Length: 216
Length: 188
Image 1: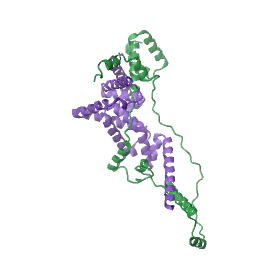
Image 2: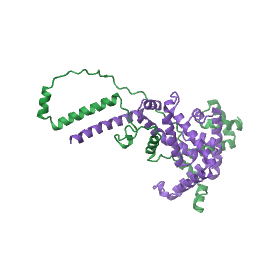
Image 3: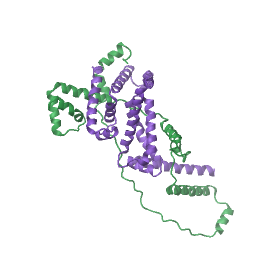
Image 4: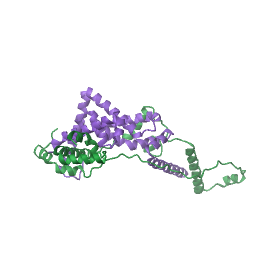
């Protein structure tokens, strides 16, 4: 009984400590969390993962169009972050750095894919299979015609984005989905500000031109 | 303003990044030029659709898989495995001065609890009574309040459109609905 009581006290105090640390980390900005990690607390890395995993996943997914591969690449982003965080220039924004790594990995993936038609076919096939899932997986509360229209609209938009040239698409996604500033996009994509503005303008126009006929 | 100048400034116009004078010039041009006004509407509508694409979430095993990959790569140490719960188990916890102090406090608390539950045997009481009193120098304890640094949460500026895509979609389903009803499946 004493052992059980002892264990419970130990577990409870450790749990309180863990919850407290989590809450404290959540209140810190990215730079401070990075600092905590570099001071030796690896839970700070988990905080960074939780903050950025979904955002990076959506960015990479919209850039390469393959969910499974996107998740692999985001994992690779975090591995590189973990490995190189000690050398990260903390005067810069952590998010910009993480997006830069993700952007480069996505670019490499697209480059490799263009050289390997089989990979492209597998990605398309997987997405096609996703589309074949029963309708009720999307939203059981919606009417079938609503579901159909939503899904069709979604695939229409995704297909239109996929038709943008890769360098336009990245700028487009960073701006429209991630809400990045022109300056951040320039840093992430290693372009100058003028190029970012021009690519964004063209991407928006092209996207509107591609999707407009389908909506008439 | 002519159409070329309008198109050059259109992205900045959509992002509200133009100065007041240029915004006035752009609006004047839009009032006069039907083609540019149509272009502006088409781009804005398309952007509403794109910005309302549903987001995807990482798979439930994302974190565990990442930890496994980090361990395989030799970056993540095995320290701390078997922690308080599954979530924190793999991320190691540094054992510093504060950790040692916490552990010591835990042991003292557990001992106190054990004594409170089981009482103290007579023999132990006797030993304790005969033990010499030793004064131990304790390190000074800082009573400074714990100060939480001011935080600036990194936020991503998200532009939320004034109405959801579905509202817009409801206005433009003519072809979409026709395809769905007549063909039974969308064109791929």
